[in-house]
Image 1 (tube, helix red, strand yellow):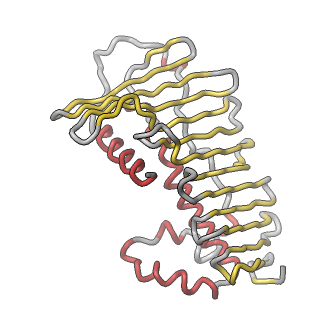
Image 2 (tube, helix red, strand yellow):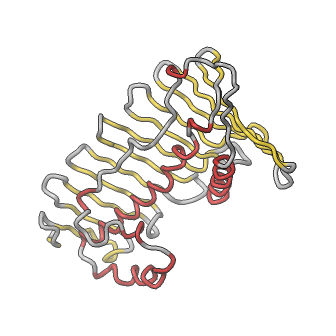
Image 3 (spheres, one colour):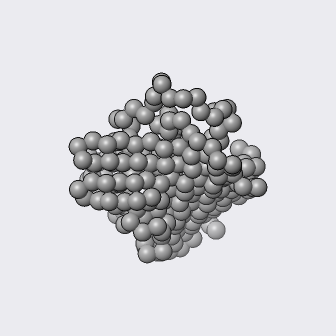
Amino acid sequence: MLRKTILLLLTTFIALSLVSCSDDDSPTGPDMSEAPDPPSVEDIEMDLSIFEEADTFGMFSMLSEKDKPLRELLPSVQNEWPPYEQAAYFASFAQYYMQIMGALPSAFFQEEMWGEPEVSGDTWLWEWGYSIEGESFMMRITATTTQDERQWELRYDLQSEDAVLDDALLIAAQVRLDGSGGSWQLYDFEEETPVFNVDYELQGDLTTFVDMRIDEDEDGRLIYESDGTISSLVMHELVYSGETVLEWNNNTRTGWVQSAGYRDGSTVCWDENFMETDC
């Protein structure tokens, strides 16, 4: 279900990006300087810089289909890797996962595609769409401000030979007005249930908490926590079966890794020089 929803998202985004929604003859709308900024996860950044010296960090973003033999080789050699390199491998996967899934709100909440808004009380509404060769599509974005947060929804209507959808919820987001965090959800386009959810906490420029999880019917969860000194990364059913845990100290550069797929599930540590050491 998650894959099907993402495919629809990508198809829709490509279609809309090819359609110009601007209209120079549109009547003057509300003061756009008062319009709320669209939700974005660009401020969410897991600090994984401790792993940048590892050869295995950034591996997932560098690999492609042409590297398939290397992909197949990786799991068989990991038990021989030192703990710092292994932890960097896991961190690289987490970074890649965050980049892929975290990009969806930013991709669809793009103001240049929205056209002129309407305002009713504390709610802003944007609508746009197209109709071509018997297929019509209409998308609506609403932003409603409450006392503590701004709630966003992206809904759409679709009429085609393959599907008919009416006011279907695609993405929702809740952003705290004080900038301390929020959440967003990707919805099943046939049933109004979330198939992916992200919660996050911020303290200034520091991301202190990220919780990314797939719906209950599919395993998969990533939890990142940091107080600026001690950071941890927990992945459930993402890389291997079971749980993978990393913890490190950003000041001393020491840390440990534990995963069912590495060293028979033992906890393995590295020192300030990134060398394996007793835990």
